[in-house]
Amino acid sequence: MINKVEICGVNTSKLPVLSNEEKQELLIKIKNGDTEAREKFIQGNLRLVLSVVQRFGGRGETADDLFQIGCVGLIKAIDNFDNTLNVQFSTYAVPMIIGEIRRHLRDNNPIRVSRSIRDLAYKALQAKEKIMKETQKEPTIEEIAKELCVNKEDIVVSLEAIQDPISLQEPVYNEGSESIYVMDQVKDTKNTDELWADNITLSEAMKRLNERERNIIMKRFFDGRTQMEVAEEIGISQAQISRLEKSAMDRIKKLYK
Image 1 (cartoon, helix red, strand yellow):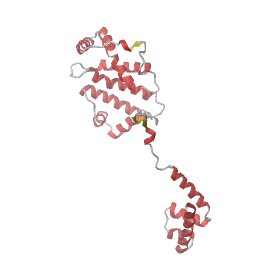
Image 2: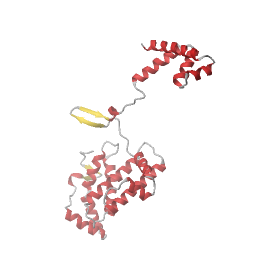
Image 3: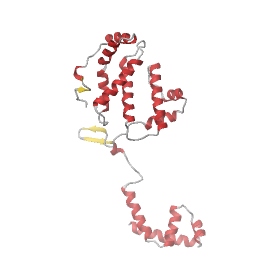
Image 4: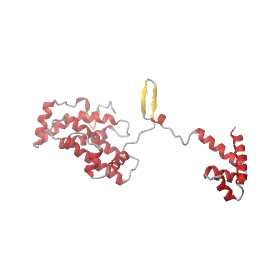
């Protein structure tokens, strides 16, 4: 996708480049309703869209589709940009283009998020764009939450819920021929091979005990009962519970060796 020359019928190697002076002149004309200047300004900023599209390679979307979506973001940026502020157009446009592409990817994401959370996330993104337009800077979560009159925690949860999933094969570090992938950094401490083997051994050992011994071990070590409590439930003395428990534990230990 990165090396593709023609996207949506546009030869990207021949895209025009506008100087800062030309951009300022065209923006003034656009504000006065000059459609020809608007078209020229769009053409002169398609390289900006192309640079953003290249960031989204490997997402299962074609370059043509992403380029078209990026152009929608570019047009929105042009329509909302205030050229009286001391901010370069590209600084304002890039987040708008990225946001438009991310919305498209989220809407076509196979992982479903509840509608209420998704709606809140979209409102948060709209509020973010509004605040950026007014202040020309990235708003904080607190500012977005205040704008929407909701808890900042809800904003965080909703925005995290619509993030693009990461492949376990995604490289996080590369040095020469050695690469570290996401799956290399994922560890399950509850389902290790060692624990799995121990559980099988313990299960087999429990089968070797008689019913009374198995009942005592279950109540003592799985239910967390004291020897006195187990003695009262079974109807024998605490001394007998202690003796049976020790005998059962000795047999289990021998099976572990």
